[in-house]
Amino acid sequence: METLSNLDIEKAVLSSIIYDSSIYEEIASILKPKDFYHPFHVNLFKAMEHLFKQDKPIDEFFLKEYLEGQKQFDEADFLELLSTNAVINTKAYIAQIKELSIKRELIRLSTDIKKLTVEEEHPSSDLMDEIEQKLYKITQDNITEDFKDSDLMVKDTLDFIQEMKARGNSKLIGVDTGFRALNDKTSGFGAGDLVILAARPAMGKTALVLNMALKAIMRGEGAAVFSLEMPAEQLMLRMLSIHTSIPLQDLRVGNLTDEQWTRLSSASDEMSKSKLFVDDDGFATIHHVRTKLRKLKSKHPEISVAVIDYLQLMTGEGSESRQQEISEVSRGLKLLARELEIPIIALSQLNRGLEARENKRPMLSDLRESGAIEQDADIILFVYRDDVYREAKEKEKEMKAKAEGKEYNSDFKKKAEEDAEIIVGKQRNGPTGTVNLVFQKKFTRFVDEENANGPDIEIEYENIDTKEGSIEVPPI
Image (cartoon, rainbow, N blue to C red; front, side, top):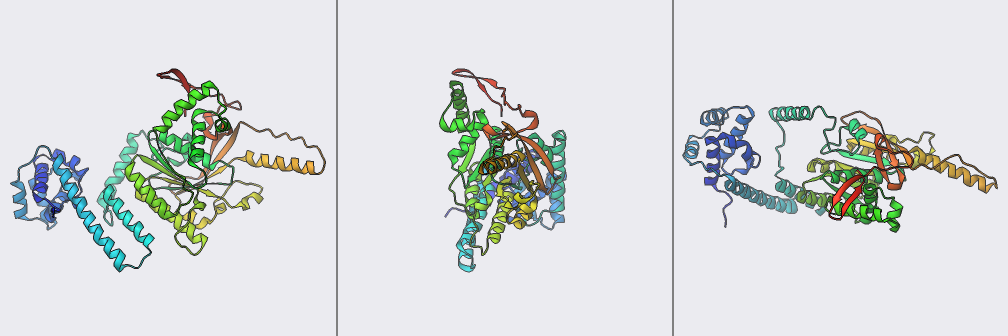
């Protein structure tokens, strides 16, 4: 049986760092103390990590001093390591140490699986989820200690502040929402955030999140969408309409001019190369979402955002009540967002009770099963378009007049562009308030107010040179 450790290789790598400490940072970006097998080698690498953070030399004197202070110094092991020849190219050695470390982790996992299966009385779905989570952590090298000490937390916080300063005090510190005004209000969606995007039907919550996903993939990032209500092809139709400025209805029936066909062909080629992944199975439990998203994120680490459309269509795992199911789902999505270090945007329906109010702008209490959702969410956004209610009210008046045999002349005019409000109802790390966008109905597209083009929606195109000649492509 192949041995699961190689002490000679471990000594060679550690000796090389002592010989040339400038290589430590590169090696530490790949190896962690737990990747070493020999206990003294583990402690020695931890000592190197400490000295590096303290900006002290990683040499024989300081290593011995630190280890003696920690009561971890072993004279014989240290002398044996110092007598080992340093190697110039450590790449193959590092890969071997990592390979053996992963195999040891898998051996430990197999032991855990046996223990969990035989000794613990839990449903198989819970066991599978726990095993998958542990396996994902192994593949991502994301196993952490139970607690972070103050030294590490202060260093990470100062690094974060320095990074923000290097950005020139930019307000965007998270994942770009795709909208300047929303970025200004939220600073972007944070890694690990659960974002709830809620609205009444026909307000455009799916359209808004597709706008966000499209802008993410156009930046070269990846996006995953769980569509529980709409087939993937319909989502792509909407995205192509947003991207090409071709009316959605024209795309649906194929009523396109030659110039629009050229635009569609160019956009289709671009979209086909993007990192957009859609699961339109129509059925999802929190277990299914966790399993699929972990696998996808592991294979495509460039994924920067995941979307659930929508929350109330998900089911729990044997919960006694619907409120418990929603609580399980929302908590599960929050933990998954933290585990994968990406924002998860979950769409949500609102209670129809708000329709009875004079002011129909949504509030937190309008969320269905709001207790769990409100507690778990880091950001809660509401989509509100007043023209939707105004148009519905005018139709109601017209139908009432016709029923009474009267003539009704409405002064309401449908607009190509409607004002839209994105209400920030909750933000754990920032202010609440309202962001004003414009909704371009023909394309189901939201834009910042300064990018709106007025009622005729005159789009300015950019000339792009292709093998077939010069074509015009609308900006995102």
